[in-house]
Image 1 (cartoon, helix red, strand yellow):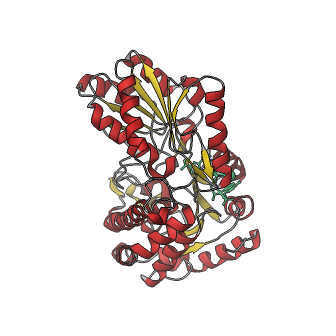
Image 2: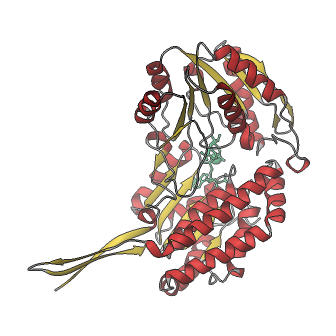
Length: 435
Ligand code: NAP
Ligand code: MG
């Protein structure tokens, strides 16, 4: 892949500028047709795209297929909402007529990580294109190919040239150039908190509009009245999905002390049945995406176990390359996992009262998601109310239809993707007063 320079980014911005005004004048219905056609081609090529995604990213082929089909679904969602960007019209006695219209931001930058590159690309490009923007996408160096292939599909689907461009390259050069370019008015970034902070600093002098999706440390709270079988199955499925590399993965499993031993036993049985291997070979859990990430996970688990802040039940071994065995730890001290564990590791933290669980859940810098597992309506409402997070699930986790506004608070960043409000990020309001 090209190692793009700031000059390459500047040239791409120049091309986008040359087509922006004709693209923003395209009827919403025509934008909708392009999005639907692109979704159709993605679906028709899902097997090839999924194989490419699995090969470059490491994820199991089944999950790669879900992600590719999920991206098509997101494009279809945006096709359905293209024409419903709201405005306002009012008669103002004495002054005249007021029209409040929404205009596209112009040229948007999208900086994408390696964990779920295709779905995150769909969220960002779908929203931006639906509103009539041009988009420059900077995918991650370690998962750039499927994003590139889907961007090319958009031209086949009838998107005019240069409206959607991919600039490959390193974050420190190509990514940085996107954040600094004065003609890019909006940047949406998904990735680590540290990089998000640095992007906010870099973007400040340019007064850019930003969306920052900076990961999470979701609590998964299993109360006394939970359906234990369902809670265990969901915890294991969701925690080890994508080898644990998902922003809203349940990263801390809080279990009522009366159920903790049984939960751990049941989870250990399910984890033992997970097949670890290459994505293409029908594995349940693939490798971590890159060696740096494998090392981060390996060190984090050794630190917790080595300092007796948690007891290893299974896993805890890096077998070969980026493969790290699905790991379960019990009796974990909450402070040992206050940092996001981005890998196949399930820490179980026992608690005695629901207020303690909520306190633990909220005691991290993050605020992305969280879930409560309960049969009691009062507990469900209370926890939903008190979790300091952008998304709360009740008896579910990691279910993210495009109708749901996605994003966090605090250290998880700001701004929302998807939902009915998607246009708020990708447009600005223009008030026109006619005398
Ligand atoms: P990262 O540094 O945040 O990278 C995400 C994207 O930003 C990549 O495309 C990266 O380019 C680019 N980038 C890096 N520095 C940049 C800069 N200064 N300006 C503009 N763009 C820049 O994430 P990472 O290093 O891959 O992973 C580190 C940690 O981030 C993980 O351990 C995990 O905790 C967290 N993470 C979270 C999520 C999430 O969805 N919440 C996703 C991925 C990672 P490159 O191609 O050079 O990397
Ligand atoms: Mg990085």
